[in-house]
Length: 392
Image (cartoon, rainbow, N blue to C red; front, side, top):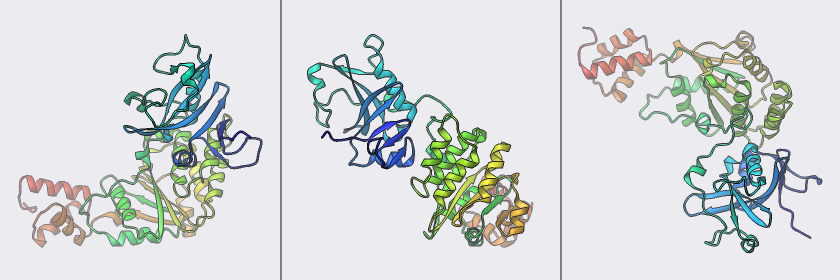
């Protein structure tokens, strides 16, 4: 009996025959990337209305591991570069099928490579006899066609910002953030320059391991609901790999259901988290989509017991804050909380700004800036450039 290899059809990876019951994985999900990078995974077949081929994992000394699509055409074996595991979203796989299905006259040298019929009988390996050539840097930088569901995710948006070195310790705020894990929502709301992002990234870096946390930095482009929820699902999936697969499949479907159904699917998958987990949304003030606000309200109202949301923003979002506050389900850190105390201001000026000031000079600076971190830093920089007494 011929050995079955996993197959992709209708945007789903089938680890067994599609007609059999067995595990399935959404293409482009965190679980599919993990499967593709597993050393035991070597190949899979792909079939769509655009064409069919076999994808094989290959390796080069320069460039490392990557995937290539192969399809026999008119007695010859043709080849198309697919990319790294994280590149293998549905649009990229479909694009390769289209290129490989073209006739010899329409194909270009850059999209496929042909070999002789004799060579077509060989299997690509890591040896020098491998059919074709290693992907060029241009290939490595290829991006899939732009589409609402297929654009690649910018991974830096999902990375916790590195805390700045030599930061002033603020245990009183870290304690408030830890206590906030007992609420549905933690709101860190203050104007620019109060150190919201720095506080949260430092808190996460110093966590003792009794909680897990993921991060999503927002920008104006995230007012597109489909885009934002793709990123949100990808972030949540990091708390429990595979938890976002079904929700992402729904979101990408041609006739996507209401977003509440998508979020319900995600929340159900996260319901059995056995440790405290937090998802941080940074710069939420950039979101002005009413549709997103309403969907986020639904999500907050139905968060599982161990899943918490942290929002950093310059202005209060249009969420049911009063209702959450009345229920004891909201922790708030505002400008008054984030201001440097006299002791923190002294530590900041001494440790970070390297200014040796008298107690009364520090008190004057703290009073002038009202503990505003950015203002204190600007005053200190000015003093380093042209040292004068703060009282002058």
